[in-house]
Image (spheres, rainbow, N blue to C red):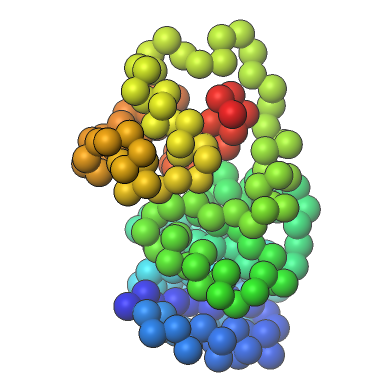
Length: 208
């Protein structure tokens, strides 16, 4: 069961979202919060698996709350769900700890699928959000692929950039999931990347 914390300053939207997600057998609404400060307090008290976080809210916005929660409770996954698709919001949210970013117009089944993906530690960006995130990356300079990456690590990284998860990469490359996980860990270390979503963005810019 995936326990959720819904964070949005619009009560009507929160209640509607709670109703829609409650019909999913594997999702449970653990709590709700109306601003970033409430979200920080609720995260400490409830320890949800996934937080659905709005961006613009009073008292403390979603970006600040995302940073604080990620620093204090890095095991809690954060999925931004907002009406705002400004480049700054997207990049700041992802850089400060969010694993995913969706717009509120996303259909409920897709939101539920994104929650499940993020709960497993995978990144999830809406199609238009991904394009915006990639366009903001700086162009590579010099050799775009470090010599420290092995041929196999480059193969894994390309598939990560295509949005494939570890089981899918395992099947495609005929490797065990444990081996794929080790390769991903080494890739993040060698490229000095914070997490898998950073690896997705890196691969999109340098390899695909």
